[in-house]
Every structure is written in C-alpha cells, then in structure tokens.
Image (cartoon, rainbow, N blue to C red; front, top):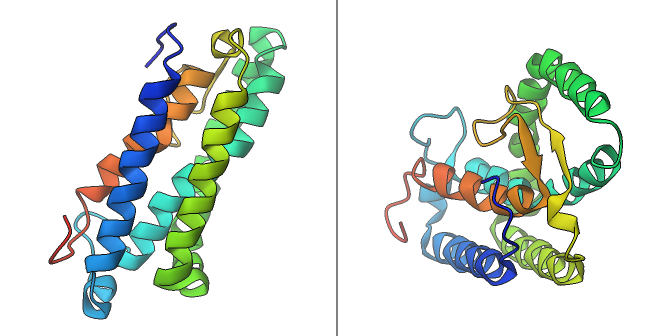
Length: 178
C-alpha cells in the first residue's frame, strides 16, 4: 500500500471482515468440501484454509523483523531481502508442506479458534502501535509473495494478510459459504 496515513480503523475492519468470512467458510463447509482440491493450488480446501490462517500468524514475526531492519541502514535490509529471495525455493517447499500438516493437526474446529486468537492479538498490537511506527519500512523478498513489494511499511504489513486471504479465498472450491 505504501500509504503514510495510519488508519487503524480500516485495518481493524479488514481483519474483522476476514475473521467473519473465515468462520462462515468453516461453518458451511462439509467434510467432503474440506477434502476437495482447490482451484489453482495443490492443496485441499482445508489445507488452503490453514494457509490463509497462517498468513495472519506470520505477521507477528514479520513485524519484529521490520522493527529491527527499519532502524538499520537501508542497505542492511536490502541485503537481507536479497538473501531471502535467494532462498525462495526452500521457502516455497516449506510454504507448501506446512499446511499439509497444519490442517491435520488443527482441524476445522481448532482452526476457527486459532484464527480468533491471532486476530485478537493483531488487534491488540495494532492498538498499541505508536503514531510514528507506520513510517518504519524495510525491503522485502518480492519473490516470496505477490503482495510483498520492494519496500514495505508497518501499515503495509497489517494490510498484507487480508490481501493474501482475499486472493486465496477465490481459490476455494467449497459448495457453500463463498
């Protein structure tokens, strides 16, 4: 997004919209729906739902990295982003394999409660951000995700998981709740 405005309410609303949509998807999916392949991925619907949850889980460590590299010289962040881009192949493997196990471990019921906990934590973190925090930025590995840009701010990071969620939601092949 790259925006300088710090509109917490918009971000809160985005996260709540995604939380409600996630529960609607889970609540209306049958067991057969969850086992069905998705459109455009190698995952089942249940595995893709876990991946969508994981997009929100990742924001906490990404915020930590941004706070560190956002205070270092920009060249340090560029070097780090280049190293991460060079590691795209192992990242892609982990990114694919994680939801295979994650969906099995959590299952439908625990995925919903995990989503609630993660969103509640992100709401608390967002409310605790200082007014100067959104100006922090760092380079990101653009090969890792189409929603990562060359340089991202804290505001961008808070918007990222919902962009990721909305993109993958269109790949679900559930019969109801879409």
